[in-house]
Amino acid sequence: MRFIIIHKTNAHWETGANPGPGLVARVGALLGELAAAGVLLSGEGLRPSSEGVRLRFSDGRRIVIEGPFEAGHELPAGFTILRARSIADAIEWATRQARVLGDGEIDIRPVTEPWDIGLAPRPEGDSTRRYMVLRKGSAATEAGTAPSVTERAELSRLIEETTRAGAHLVTENLRPSGRGRRYKNSRNGISVFDGPFIETTEMIGGYVVVTASSIADAGRFAERYIVAVEAEEVDVFELEDIITASAAVRC
Image 1 (spheres, one colour):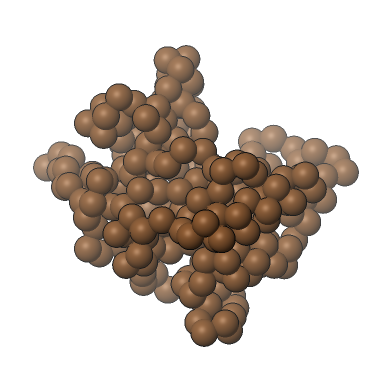
Image 2 (cartoon, one colour; image 1 turned 60 degrees about the vertical axis):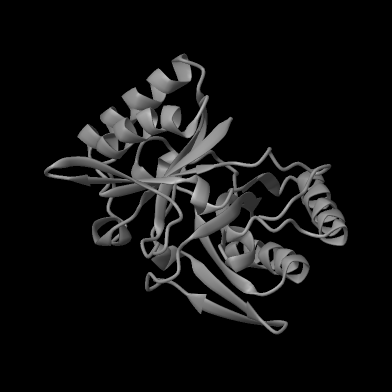
C-alpha cells in the first residue's frame, strides 16, 4: 500500500525562508534511510504561496487569486506535478482538469528545487520548472465518490496528451480523510488522531510518499518525519493506484 505523509507550512516558511543546514541534514538522513529500506517513493517541498495562485471554479467561471493565500479550506483531494514553462501554463492545465471535474478550488505552487535553496546550481538552458496543482477536497471526494466513465475518459486523454508533451509527471489521488490519521507535535510529545479531518486550515508545506503494510506502519515514518521537518502537524492519507495516461481517476 502507498501512503502520503503531508506536513503543513507556517508563517516562517511563508516568508520564503530557506532551511538551515541542521534541518537539511536531518531530512536528508531520514530520506536516505527510507530510500535504502526501499520504502521511499517520492517527496517534495513547496515554495511559499506568494509564488503561487489559487483558482476558484464556480458555475463554469474561473477566478484567479494571486498569492500569498489566506489559509482556509485546505483539505487535499489529490494533486498533479507538472513541468511547465510558466505558471500560466500550469493554470491552463488546471483549468482543463476543472472542465472535467467541475467546480472546486485548486492551488498552484512551484515545487522547491535544489537551486531554490542554494543546494545546487540551476541546470543551464532549463527554462521550465515543476508546479504542484493541488485540488481541494469536497463532500463528494470525502465520500469516496468515483468519477463517471466519461470523466475518466476525458481525464485520461488530458493526461496522455500532456505526458507526451513532457508536461505531466504524476497525478495522485488521496483516499477520504476518514481513512487517514493526523499527528500533532507538542512539548508533551506526539498525539495521534484518526480521521476524518473536520478542519484542515494549514496549507501543505511538503510531503513524502512511502510504501507500508498499513496506516499504523506508515505512522512510524510519520512520527520520525514530523520531528525531522520540525512540523507541528502532519497528515497521513492512503493513496489510490498511481494515475497514468491509461488509468485516470478523480484527483
